[in-house]
Amino acid sequence: MAESDKPLLIKRYASRRLYNTETSDYVTLEDIAGFIRDGREVKIIDLKSGDDLTRQYLLQIVAENESKGQSVLPISVLTDLVRSYTTHATSAVPQFLAASFEMFRDSQSKWLENVNTMNPMAKSLEAMQAQQEAFMKAMSGAAADAEGKAPASQGKEDLESIKRQLTELQSKLSKLDK
Image (cartoon, rainbow, N blue to C red; front, top):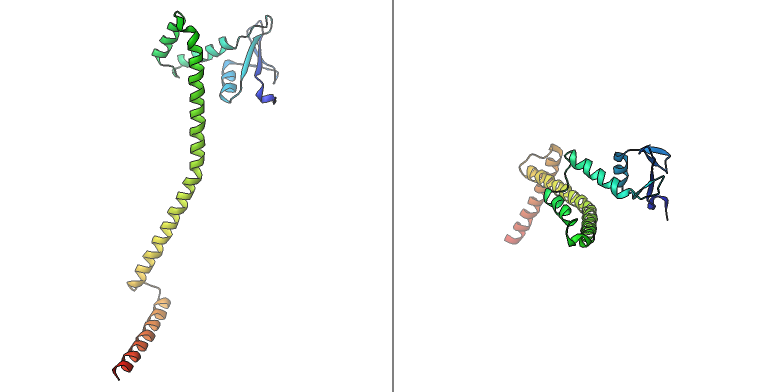
C-alpha cells in the first residue's frame, strides 16, 4: 500500500496537542480538515490509552465549521440525527448515511468526468466558431469585391478577364449569326 493510501496517523498527547507522525510536527484541527479535503484519510489516537479519537475530532471539525456559518447540515438533518440516537433507527442511520455519501461521491466524480470530456468538445466548438467567422469574413470580402471595393490591382485583373470573356462571347455570337 502506498504511503498516501494509509491513513495519516495523528497522535494526541496528554497536553491535548495533536502530532502528525509523518511530518513530525504539531497540527491543528484546521490542518486536519485540510488533509481530509485533500482526500487523505486520517486516524487520530490517544498516545497514552491508544483509544481511537478520530470520530470525536471529526465531529469537532464539523461543529466548528457549522458554528462559523459554513452550514452544510440543515437543521432538519441535525434534528433527525439527534432523534436517531433515541430511537430504534440508530442501527440503520449509519448505513443509510454511508450509502448516501457514497452515492454523492460517485455522482460528483461522474459529473467531473463529464465536465472534463466536455472540455475537448468546447474546444471543438471554439474551432468551429473560428472557422465560421473566417468564412463570414471571406464572404464579406467577396461581397465587397462585387461592389467594386476590391483592391485596385485585383480590380484591373478582373476587368481584363471580363473583357476577354465578353470578346469570346461576341465572337461566338457573330459565328452563330452567319
